[in-house]
Image (cartoon, rainbow over all chains, first blue to last red; front, side, top):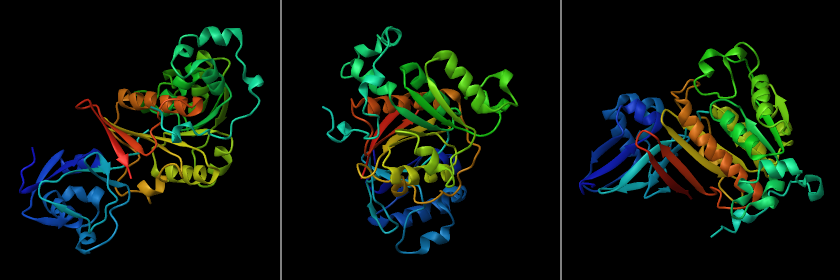
Length: 101
Length: 254
């Protein structure tokens, strides 16, 4: 169950492997942007840089997500950008596209 | 209920149904699957006259090829470069120990012909690239993408989109897998999901053969549904599989 003061993030595939965990809870009192969520992840899990790229990417207030990174909420892949708002209580899955054959 | 979009023909299959009537031997071989609802002898004939390209017959593509050969697809076009290596053998089920050091494509053809000697195979000892994608895709009605590099997937989807052909996008990583069908304008373009090569993807990825085999079987079923025009193919939906927890999610792609 999601705490109403946090955003629950599920990490999959190479992002889960890079971060070393499959689920993280980000403290959040109000709304924030996906860019801020990614910056928080990189601060807490520096190895996630392998998938999310350098934190400098997330100083911008708007822009595209890293190529091939799906953001899924309630079983729907969002047309998300850095400036997309997320709020406390949300549950998101960050799903890097994979290519193993 | 069947989606209207899934009923649209692939549009590139030969029109002469007589040339694809089944022999008595084929009727006997495929009798059990022709009992499947909405498939029948008509579906079997559609499989017989279809040409399916599989990009790489490694851990995933080899299982797709084997299942399609078993199901009675008429022609497989297999694209895969290189020789069999010992590290292939944990998952690439068309390769065998005695094939180590020999072309992968030769092993694949031999194993498939053992299963189905009626199968026509076009073997191409190349991986898909921007330089050859148009030519190779032109030979097929339908494509299965099982390549390990995003460069290959992007090149193939670009060419398939130009030629209006559906691509079954199947992939795995560790104990996870994903599957969807890309067929613009019925669906998003692959580049809508992956605009460019993602950061951090590496040629060597963690893999059990049982994972690539699982999604390979599912990809083969998507081919059969698309070619025989029944069921609901994964248009605008992606199945995400996590075999660590045995979780299967269907994600809507907007």
